[in-house]
Length: 424
Image (cartoon, rainbow, N blue to C red):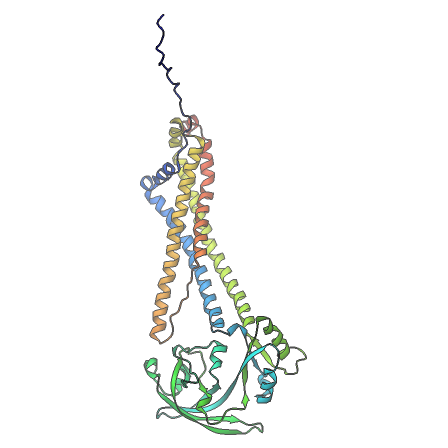
């Protein structure tokens, strides 16, 4: 018997791979096939998800926008959150004198203080007839403490004195609403202010010609003007209220109790912006929660529609599942395919919904800003969508897709080829 040569090697045993699992790329390509086979139904399902997601994004963005408008106005300014507004009750008709101010300045925790003299005045614009207007005589630091900034122009300073006028005051001056407000910057106003005295009488103090430096365009503001001390020949000695800046956030509560708490020797009414901000956030958070509930209801309806679509798709593809399993597809392949399809519908619905919600909000922001700026006000942003919320919404929509497709995917994976052909 002939012996095989020394360099002979036996043929390798044929190895047959039994792992038929589809790759993620294969699953993705197969899942997108529904856009070709059932384009109308699939697109409508994605559209339904996008409407639900878009509603959530739209309403929650409105809630965040309202919070930004409300809280942003309260916290505007460098020292706004450390500022306390202090005054006597209106019923007492008492005014704050210079001795009380000096006493308060000496309190621990008081970093700075600016008094506000609010008197009645007769102010005229140009050669127009003077009108009765509330007049606030303040120091330049008032604007830093209060966070108030004019919508047009600038606040006055010690180096550049001027006067800030409200929209209602301009109407009393007889200035037509069609007149561009920016053209009024640098125009002169003059008149007189009536200083109150301790005995109840008043003293007439002339206001020299002074230029308008800023305008408040909010029509809800009462007719008033802000004058610097340099505009009057005599400094006021009695004040309606004052703004106190606390040295630290902890001093805000301490000073609130010292100046207006029970048993306080001062007996003031104290309003702290820090507390207003906390209250405002509670209100806006409640509004955002309510809007989120309404948006979630729309999202649930969309999710039910998607679940129904996946069920119908499973019933229509029973024969296809049998063919796939006959060709060697595993239970995991079939389940993953259905899950990938539902995931892609949820993912695409999330992307289109977020785009729809943000886009609609942006269009409204643009329209409102254009309208606001045409009336001389600042740009208005009513819809704000945080990035984290958009990402969270996309994750949520994808998860809804997976949840909606889980039951059909599980049933499809349990079908045997024989059962699938018989049921077909």
